[in-house]
Amino acid sequence: MKSRYTFSDYSTEWPARFQLEAERLGRLLGDELVAVHHIGSTSVPGLAAKPIIDLLPLVRDIQRVDGRTSALQEAGYEAWGEYGLPGRRYFTRDREGHRTHNVHVYQVDDPEVDRHLAFCAYLRAHELARTEYEALKREAYAHHPADMAAYNAYKNAWMKQVERAALEWYRRRPG
Image 1 (cartoon, rainbow, N blue to C red):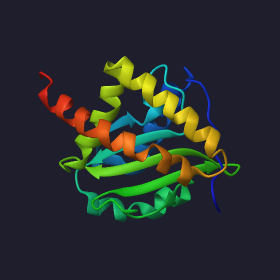
Image 2: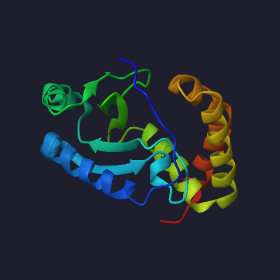
Image 3: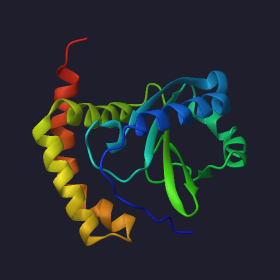
């Protein structure tokens, strides 16, 4: 079934929703889990977004996550496998037909992790980029309120451009 989605101003509830889901994933992934990061637009204070919490669990061995897929499915997650990104295990949760969570599981040493962390950190640190991105997101939603794939495609070129700058910035940061 195709997920529906909405778009809203930033909510101070998003960090708490992330924390609850991170704890739930911790119970499901057990000692395989190293850390869980809040990524995506809901992790950027003040940024309007689809109210879908994106989580980035980092695990010791990505192959062992495959053995926990049935437990994740029993807990209400849909499993998508790598879903176009080698090395990732992608899961989603919907409630009443609306997407509520995207879970991007990576092995802790996967080079793609920095890309996910950098983009959000860059938006949190660069107000102009955050403002531009919000305007683009609002425009994308106005054009595609019922098509999440088209909404995402609308933003893709801008995101790829900023992602390059974000990665350079992220890797140069002290500490």
